[in-house]
View 1 (spheres, rainbow, N blue to C red):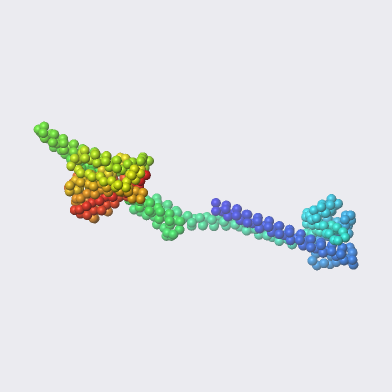
View 2: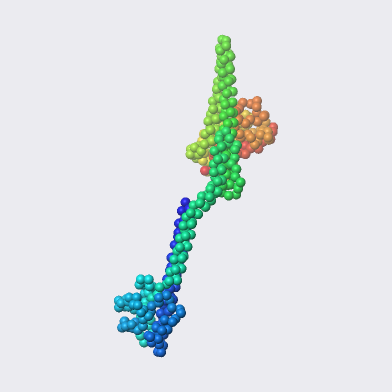
Length: 445
């Protein structure tokens, strides 16, 4: 392609140079031809002492004559007044003379001669002048230019592909190098990064972009690996407990009350396992963009009241107080969201607040700020270790002060993903042994 483009461009340039040079040669030659003929006509017509014979002698010895110059002058009756065409080489008939008088100036060729016919007007008569010559020097220069251009063109046809092949090889060598490096990268070697010497050109920017993508892929693979390991561990624990209890029970017959106690324990483990499975499914659901297609208009206050009723039904000891700012109206309470996901987020925060507070009390406050609604969840209890504040939203993470309480460490990570899916923000402020405040910010619809 490079060779074709250069050759086409060179062909166009060469043809342009040749045709413009040929056009200039023709115009220049006819200009000199006319000047010479006008001078001869002026001598013959305007100078009384000069007649046709004298003009022939003058023209014969004139050093500025053009090669094979022929000048013929006619009067208005088409009678020849003067002619230097002794061999009668220029054929001029009355039709051609009439054409000259009609158009006032014409150009044509007669064999090797280039002929100019024009109307020379003086105050008493209208004279027709025909001048012809052979542009030996001009045509010679034009042929020489044509040969030079043709020679350069033929040499270029050989040189351009070779130079293009060398240039493209050097230009594409960094890409070939990147291809070789990329072929070595696999799922087991995601820590490998591409390298290039020049980081400022387009190849360097491509390498940086590709390396950033590898960073994200590596983080995603590690997160997936840790997620699978943690999920397997969390699922294995209740299953192992259930299996152990059943195996111990089957060793020997027991009283009916003992069987009921064991079944209640197994039921609790199954409920915990079911809750964990549901949370894992929701965690996977919030990791895809498909959820965004299900967003509908939701009233935040109604969702909170529903969550409160559901939690109090299963946990009568919980105390949940919901406080709405007086400035809130229907518009400022409506968001675009997924009902089940939002209820899950609110339920997790309220449940955690009641579970980890001293008096099972959670204060929920709704406020409006600019184009968002703020939802605060506040409780007083053990608080969160400051060292854990940056990691509490990671899946399966649990603080050191909550190890003795039941849980799987999925709730807060699920809340974080759900709020992010709704283009909102979540902040937490906590002091050990004091107040913990979670603040959600969700754009209103």
